[in-house]
Length: 180
Image (tube, rainbow, N blue to C red; front, side):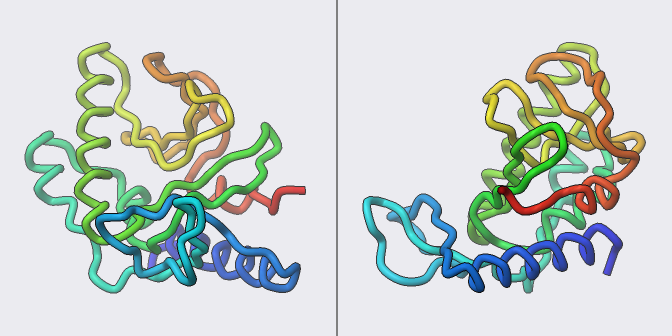
């Protein structure tokens, strides 16, 4: 298992333990067409409780990589192959972040389509290729891995990356904490 996968797995376990100890549940939108392996309990107002469920059958990114003629950074592939889940809300020194995870196996197709769209936009704008993995409270800001180096950047949608947050995805994940 890669360092990214180990770090994210540990982070998910610690967050869940803390939430359970505090009597909290995590909630996400419940897709009416397909349930997620991570959801449990009844759907209430289109929301369902969830806990992360570790991926058993790894996501195959080879078609995406072949089509884009681009090898995704190994940290991104490792990251998205850790767990299914809703957005995990955490805290970084720059503010709140929400780690993205596929909701179920079929959702990995949508994820890959979104990555393709993002890469094509970056190419059209003649910018360095980044791959997103988290969002912020500002819908125009996301967290991305610079595909060529593995460094983590705060990225304004449509703009070249400028603000480096960490030298690697592992380092970035280590900097996260539970929200206050």
